Length: 186
Image 1 (cartoon, helix red, strand yellow):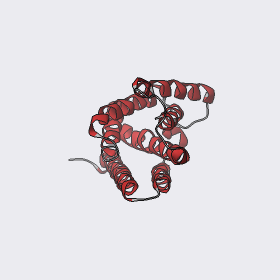
Image 2 (cartoon, helix red, strand yellow; image 1 turned 135 degrees about the vertical axis):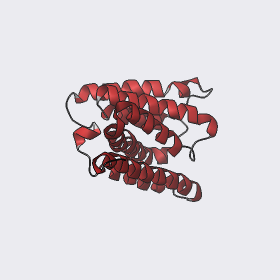
Image 3 (spheres, one colour; image 1 turned 90 degrees about the horizontal axis):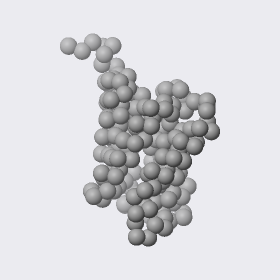
Image 4 (cartoon, one colour; image 1 turned 120 degrees about the horizontal axis):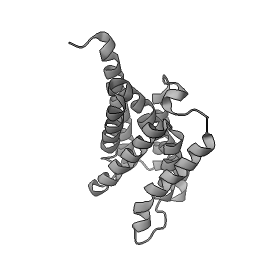
């Protein structure tokens, strides 16, 4: 039987996972039905930022030490994340200009939610393997309604790369920078 102390991380992780999936799926469905995709993205991104409300900056991986290296790491992550786009016949970005700022908001929100708050909760639950695999699986499931099925492997690979960076570097700045650049370029 699980003790109350042991169930707290499980309950916190389950609540966060449920909230994140509901926000992402609602955002995806609302973007399809709405004429204001930018507004839907901004609201969804801000709703994801709320997941950090009860997590310290250091636990999120948002400390300011070695900030220059963290940003440089984000640029390296972006280069790897952009490899599939470089292989496209027309490597020009396909994101409409009016969605650039909403894409930045949602990218930051997703990283704070998935590799920040959810990662920390899953790490408390079962360590780095649970945090990396769990955040990657939920990341992929969250994108199932907004991406074609044949693209979900690439989504999972990106989530795994960003999760491994979060673990290895104890850093969320790099994944945020990489995700923002990749979303703007794709």
